[in-house]
Image 1 (tube, rainbow, N blue to C red):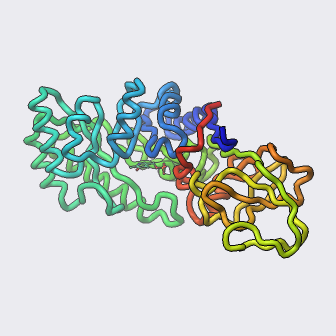
Image 2: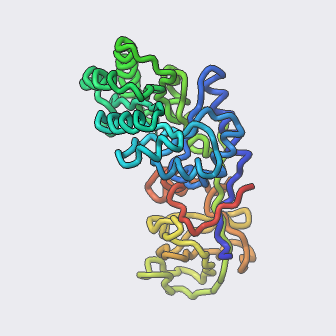
Image 3: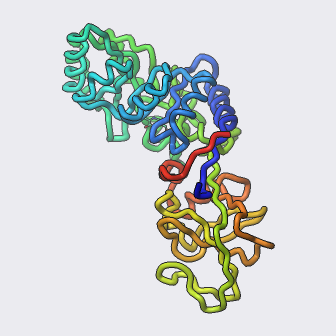
Length: 362
Ligand SMILES: *Cc1c(COP(=O)(O)O)cnc(C)c1O
């Protein structure tokens, strides 16, 4: 096996889930968000652990993601946040998946299938309060409900919205979104729909806006130990590791890697790591990132290649082939550090870790 792998700490994941429960309290349910292969952590193992911890539901982006979890034998309710296409309706109904709905034509397609198959399909209605992405807009909600009333094989189980800036410095937009959501909920109630669940809070809102908790919350990033907005005690779950596969001494003036973007300004010891941008260690990290090795840190030097990355270990005592290197996920280098160096967010750092990097569950 190529010595590059990801360690997933299931106990930390469970502890983060309990942190969410502690913040929201007993009366509020949890849809744990496991889309994008559980933010790169592996959706089946993560879903299993969260079901054991007592999650009420799982949330994914696509029907394929839901099926992968269902096929592994997990029986929990699974909500498909990104909606479904008309040709996926049968799969959704047969696998007891919960679509989110924001289009009347899809609602009609589901209703038609449900009537034919003699089943009732429960769904969550997505409303748009400011993200301007998916969802029924406030101006369209009355018309939408009038059309829904006739679809008798559908059951409105939940209503939800999503925040555009719950982590931002200004709280104005989120407060406005919560107001608009409550306004739409009362219209839905006046139309005699009685959804069991109302939900809006992602990780940032869970921590910052208690009034957004309603009776169900949708944590993603905080389950994975990132996105701490205050005094939550979140533990990192993912640790990306590799091992040195070669070391060499180079003289002053020697360039390293494609394009010679690093040139040694002193006699230097270079160590080569078997990880590159095809593993999700993106090229923007070239000459910017640090890695953790033997209790200290070493800089990435030269351009990150598709399969390999070089680090300068001149100041690491006795660095050798076979030494373990933590790319991120320990006390020295966090996923947030890598995100900062790569000019992105931890969500992306986690979710782009490639398929060829095996996940090892601890
Ligand atoms: C991804 C997602 C979440 C989780 O967001 P975090 O910021 O990771 O907590 C919640 N709701 C929806 C609709 C999402 O797409």
